[in-house]
Amino acid sequence: MTDAPFAIRTFGDPVLKQVAAEVGNIDDALVRLVEDMIRTMYEANGVGLAAPQVGVQKRLFVYDTGEGPRAVINPVLDEFRGEWVYHEGCLSVPQLWWEIERAKEVRLRGLDLEGNELDIEADDLMARVFQHEVDHLDGILLLEHVKPEERKEAMRVLRQRALGLPVDMPDRPERPERPEPAGAQ
Ligand code: ZN
View 1 (spheres, rainbow, N blue to C red):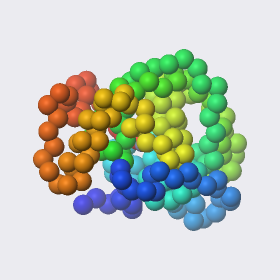
View 2 (cartoon, helix red, strand yellow):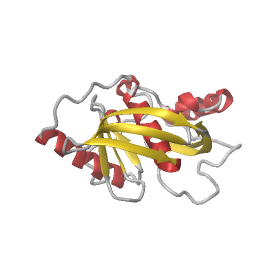
View 3 (cartoon, rainbow, N blue to C red):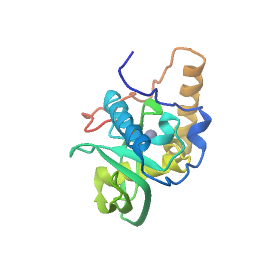
């Protein structure tokens, strides 16, 4: 179907609910994994992809918010500031979007692929991607951030999909009306 090295794991796959393990050492296999994740992310038109989404229980993610592909290993977030509600989608819960509140600014620390220490003050989309991806490493899907009534509707849609039934979503378009500035994560 695509040339992506990995099939992206979707809702219902138990790997998405597990807490990923710290990366102990950056070797050739890890570099290849990152390259394959980046290709998989681009094939899916995503802006971020965490290792558990391709079935790998390691604390790392890749992203591209417009400045080329980057990898973050063993990321840690703190200094959450402000709040920002924005539509957000997940490659593991495809074609569904919600308005989700997250911190507007965060500080991210971790390592890059060369083992250099990263210390990034992020805001807006980059801050959102970081929070979304670190959630994946902790076994948290964005469904846990949506309002209870929206979650109920999402579960209904996901059940219908799992059963191969036609999905009806009369109340809400599956995609935001406005142009999508960046893909899902
Ligand atoms: Zn996601």
